[in-house]
Every structure is written in C-alpha cells, then in structure tokens.
Length: 213
Ligand code: SAH
Image 1 (tube, rainbow, N blue to C red):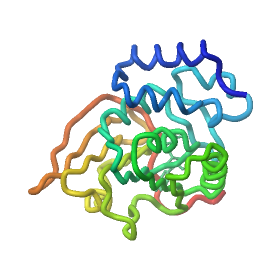
Image 2 (image 1 turned 180 degrees about the vertical axis):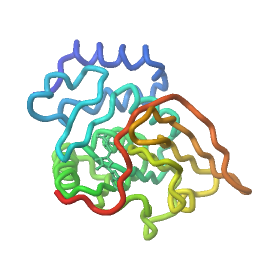
Image 3 (image 1 turned 135 degrees about the vertical axis):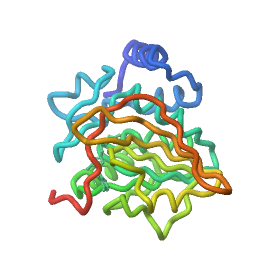
C-alpha cells in the first residue's frame, strides 16, 4: 500500500513550513514514500515530522531535517554523493532522485541488507550500499562531489574531508552525542575548507568499527 494524496499533501505542507522550499528536494520527497522505510508499530506515524526507531537501536531521521540537509547539500544531477549512515535507507533514496550515483555506508549488516532489498524493490538502481566503518570514507571510490553524514561526530572525520572534491560540499552534524549538536556545511575550496553553521540537530552518534548485528 502507498500513501494517500491527503497524506502526501500534509507531508509536503509540513516540510515547507519547516523551511524545505527547494522544489527539486520537495519533488524527490514526494516521490519516495517514507512509509516504506518504517516498520512495525511505528509504520502509521511515518508521515509525522519526527524521528522514529528502526532496527539495531538506530533511528530514521525527521523528514524536515532530511529535507533541510538535502537542500543544504545543493546536489546536482551529475553529482557522485556519499552518505555515511544508511540506516533505513530513506535519506539515500531521496538523494538517489537528485544525484547521478549514491554510495551509502552502514556499519550494521542487518540495516545494509534491509536497505539494499528496499532499493531493489523500489528500482533505485543508482544507489550502492556498503558495509563498512564510514568514518574512513570510501577511498576506492573517492573523490565525491557531495558527502552527507547522518550520525554525529565531535569533528568532521579527516578522511571524509580528504575525499571531498575541490568545489565539493559536505553536510554533517557535529557535537557530543548526548547533547544538542550543530548541523554544519563544509565547502572545499582550492586553498582549504570553509565552515558554516546551519541549525541545531540531534543525531545518533557516529561509532567506529562494524556493528555486531
Ligand atoms: N540516514 C538514515 C539515518 C540513520 S541513523 C536514514 O535515512 O534512515 C545513523 C546511522 O549511521 C545508523 O544506522 C548507524 O548505524 C550508522 N552509523 C553510525 N556510525 C557509523 C559508521 N562509523 N559507519 C557507518 N555507519 C555508521
């Protein structure tokens, strides 16, 4: 079953009222049914603007935050994008509508497998999933035009900065895992990196190594 026209309309209205105004981002979020990425008892809350629990003790991010992060990333159709933290796969699915190719990395096997099955089912063939510690990036596939991190680190991981193409953009939450974090945007220039603070956010922590599940 897919979402109703009324659910879609309310979902888009809520996104707009939280500052998601880029028409390409809104169109992508209209195409991808968040209900497919949420299971069990939380499924009927899929269209509310809140984060929800998923397996492995992780969370699917709040839709307005997904929208704001995607908007801040300024993705264009030729971009090669890396996402750290596949989780449910929802954010990667949105990015797949805007980018040429999405490389998404997850440290839990169960999450990677579940997301890969969903991408296959939805025909999202431009997403490649990886089981790895994403804090090292994906050196074999670098450089990336865009990098989106959906787990919070205290500082931007060095390997990710190094794997960003000159002219590229990275959006990520930084700060302590048990406190409110700040969403920042990093632009790589010819001579270095420019940092910009966007808004307060709350994400699960970036954890090193592979997960047990
Ligand atoms: N983007 C996701 C939100 C996922 S929550 C979505 O749309 O649903 C953050 C995810 O990052 C979790 O699944 C967590 O397991 C993963 N994660 C945390 N540290 C990681 C690391 N070092 N490497 C890869 N994935 C990591």
